[in-house]
Length: 319
Ligand SMILES: O=P(O)(O)OC[C@H]1O[C@](O)(COP(=O)(O)O)[C@@H](O)[C@@H]1O
Ligand SMILES: [Mg+2]
Ligand SMILES: [Mg+2]
Image (cartoon, rainbow, N blue to C red):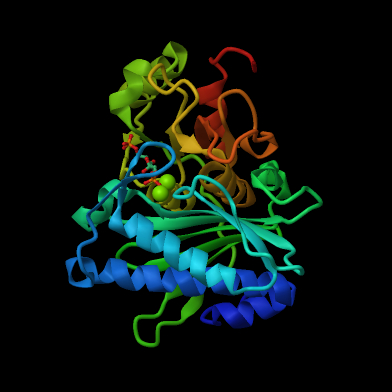
């Protein structure tokens, strides 16, 4: 169903089986609560430092913790969801649902450093089959090709939901009048040929020299524009609609990469590929990567396939 303006629920009734639809609907319900907190800003209460660190040693903001709790609590009530894994939790959480057919991995709040400055942040999620693996983190260690659905919420001037499902990318926008998610983009295709790069250029000196040289040449001589919000979801959302590439490559300070495979790179790469783009780590396709850890990191270069190719070709062969 592609009629503009139809609700998420009506769209899901046609696009997904009822069980998968219920999982997406529950993620959406929790995310709309997060959206309301974000919209309230300081009026929602202090959203700054929570005084704790997550398993990766990163300072947690109160909104990171609140968002995690909203998603975890909301999803725990769905009997079809066996377990969740989150950036903010050391290990996967299993709900004891005998009929749980799905696993959900999520970054509850992407772009935490932008919370206090009213810049777009988001929620990223990946829905995987439960499979036969025993209960535990290992059940989540599936390549991105196994994802049944990938998506993100963007909390910016508009609250949007972007979904990759059945090989298509669609976008819903939150109606401010009745708080419903309505279809605004029935088939997003990444534009090609846009000369735009989204990367943290302050890290350029730490990148593979060949990659750094290529990017420097593109900007100095190729007419490339540079854009960097500092929230992956916002930077990739821009690429999805305007074209160009997003990159957070391996570097000498973070040789294993910064962005997490299961709940950042895998879902965002599924969205980029489904919209006609390409997503690689620098040593291979992201969606083919077999994760070995719940919080594993990787490099990421994604977007317009021709520009991604131009960036990775000078890099050494896959290792
Ligand atoms: O500090 P930098 O280099 O700007 O990093 C920004 C990157 O870190 C992230 O914020 C990591 O996400 P979290 O906020 O979920 O930790 C990405 O969204 C973004 O691309
Ligand atoms: Mg993140
Ligand atoms: Mg996060």
